[in-house]
Length: 463
Image 1 (cartoon, one colour):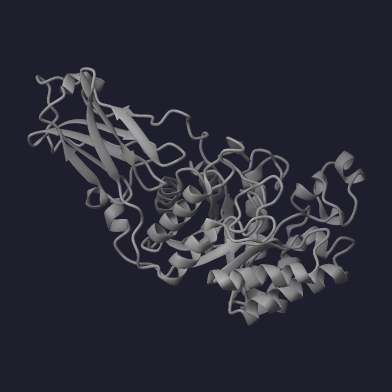
Image 2: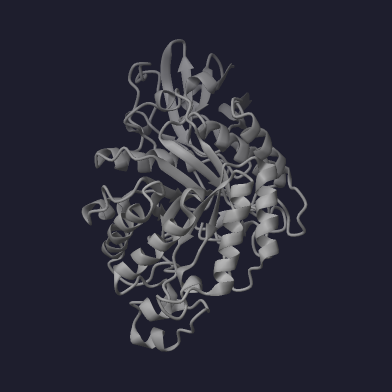
């Protein structure tokens, strides 16, 4: 999601309970053409894995849990910084992520830092340091004087006010590099990382305008990384800030030469979070890139039942939001290639209900869920439930599961695997799947599990 705006990672969750993909001989099953238990069909590329999910999740990782907080804006004041960090401290987070827009800090020229903007940023960093929380600074928004925007956009560009020209990359990448080097030198060890831009692959161009996006982003990153390291080698550099999980833009970035110019890769995934992480990690491995992932935007909006869709995401209830956040954090705490998970976001706003607290500052159920997980990360995510009943000439399988990945259903007759399907849960993490009538209504053993965690965390029933 962009800052205080949500970007869809996949198609919106379907209103139907499930989408099943039959993975067997020609999609047809009969007693004459059984699938042996050893004949496991291949999974789609987006769900497959170079290493099994069970092996990937076996080793516990030192996951840094965090939350996105309001950053420097047109009307930011020091009290907002105080309040945001106070809530973050109560959440037991290790990091907070906030905007530090270049256009707000250097609106007029590269030699003049805006005093109000600097005072807010100083306060935010000081508050976070006092709470033993480190800050991720996301630095985007090109000032009018530096923007590579077309002339007609530059004519309408007003220093200190956001506009279309600010989304374009700088004409000279060295100007951006000098600014992020200034931040690294000024704030040093109080900064967990500087994130180079936000969502450069976002199709709506709300953050990175123009053409040749991969090449242009690589140009900025290749200038920023050595400048930050020269100013303070201890400040990590986050690259990517990707919303797309199909790997197309990341492959283009590798082709443009970003490898070796960052410490960690940041991604923003919402729907099918775990599947998206696995998919993008495979693209990294194929490029010989072992750098950790930062999931520094993910969340669910508790806008149900007032709305069905909000910022391209399916609305859920407050209770489902809380369970989804807890389950995802627990799962990622056992995922070695994910270094950080930063929830989107701290507080609701008039158009978004992704917050852990509501617009008035009251704790939502999600707040308590995040506190419990970050205080005791050794727990387990929600399990799978399964019920079977006869319906017509076949069997209906229904139940629930944990959020974030494809689910797998397998039907056995005796020891033979007769049917397998991949499906996705509905927005409330439920499923209802009619098995083929050719399987019959009796003598079946059905197993359902989340692909990420494997059969050990699944459920099975007989009928």
